[in-house]
Amino acid sequence: MEIKPMKCDAAVMIPLLIIAVIGCSKPQSETPTKDETRIVSLAPNVTEILFALGLMDSIVGVTQFCNYPAKAKELPKIGGYIDPDIERILSLRPTMVIGIGEVEPHKTVCDKLSSKNIKTVLVREKDIASLYEAIKTIGTACGVAERAERLITEIKKRLDDIRERASEKKKQRALFLCGVDPLVAVGTTSFINELMRICGAENVITEARDYLPIDIERVVAGKPNVIIQITMGTEKISDDFWQRYAELIPAVKSNRIVSVDADLFTRCGPRIPDACEELFKALHK
Image 1 (cartoon, rainbow, N blue to C red):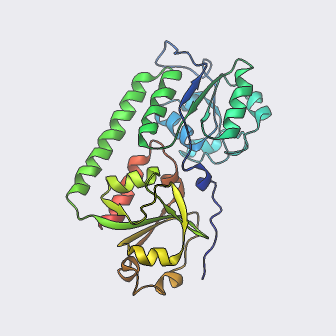
Image 2: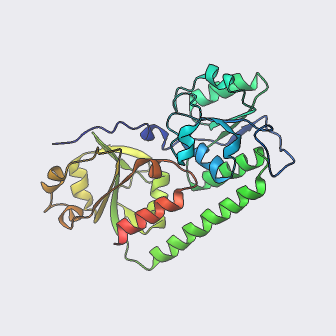
Image 3: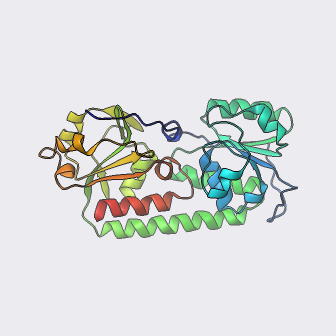
């Protein structure tokens, strides 16, 4: 069986975050300057929210995994997602550091920085509702609350449009794989399952878990019409492997195995509507 492991930090980042704002006061200006605010982001989805709120000129540090938008790759790096370097962060003289509530290293770093009178914000990344909370929290903390409300409204509108289009389509039995060695499937409590429902998919995995390992027999039993698999670079399950089960799995027989970008589907951020659009096309083409 030709299956290669995903070498992707994304799998660590999928189901995290509890909202908790620590020591943040609301600035008066809706147009903060870089001199007023120096922000370090501890997570790719946080970085994307900051850019979407027009705060790119206030960002002074990001993780090595913050690669969107392209401008983020040019910013100083403070380490990885689960191993931020506190000394590197301090060297950037931040006035605010934003991270993920469920990531213990983020909590540890923020506790230490709070003791040095640096404002810290922790948000959660569990589901779409928490995305709206995160945008609102970050917008308020950074003095751009109105921009945050506009961004939330835009995201909701786009998702509602996709949901309406999906309601006119036949529901598809779908399997969403986010790991290939072993096979790791999306359960019903993952935010990816929310995207599946919006797009008119019925998840063949019914367990109330975010992600769970499965075997090929479970795939066969589920009889998915569509299989979505996250890829990182060229790493994916080989076509030869799937073809062994062409007569047993409807998605394989009808050649409906679709690979999608890991970053787009593992970050609960402002590009969620883009992920939904891609998923909608995969399900209903």
